[in-house]
Length: 239
Image (cartoon, rainbow, N blue to C red; front, side, top):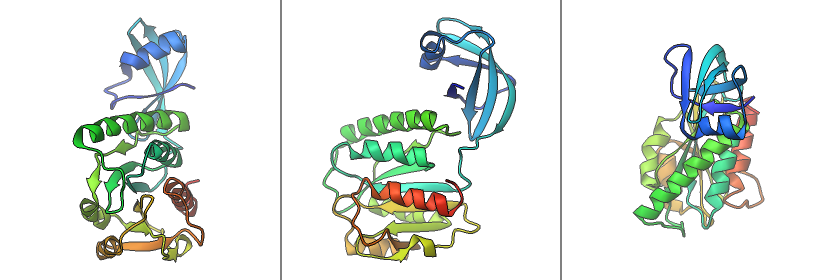
């Protein structure tokens, strides 16, 4: 069933406008009486098209249910900015796997350091990628991609999580040893191509982060978030 994201519905009737309305009418060629799924804040609203025009679609909500695709933990990914277009891949896969918020981070070893204008354009592109990945994977929310932040600004956010984890290429505890029971939020910090400076690891530890290892093999910066997120989702029963 086609899936679209909406603002919080005010009653049983919902009006869809803009590109989504055009997509429903012209690309999908849906008609009055056809069903679609409308998503908002982790809730799926099963709806029926009641009216349709060139630039808007009216729907009637017939039932609602929690999104089965949403995990029962909120996983925040803090990803050190990689080179080239690797962040596109990371955003897409992180959303597919259930991450709720992606924070691009500038660490000391980041080679990519876009200026303010370029960073703004990148964030807009990443948010579009997150939207498309959320639709494709059946998510009940559109995960947020924040502005690029320096590493030190991550510390208060790590402290606010139930569990904070930093993947370190020089070793740490196994993810299997982390106690995720009664955990509602997890922050996961992944480095760029060059990994982390020792001083950054110490700052994260002072903010409550556990230092973890993903095994004896060194993973690429675009592989590590996929692997770590998959393991966390599996250990918490969300795969």
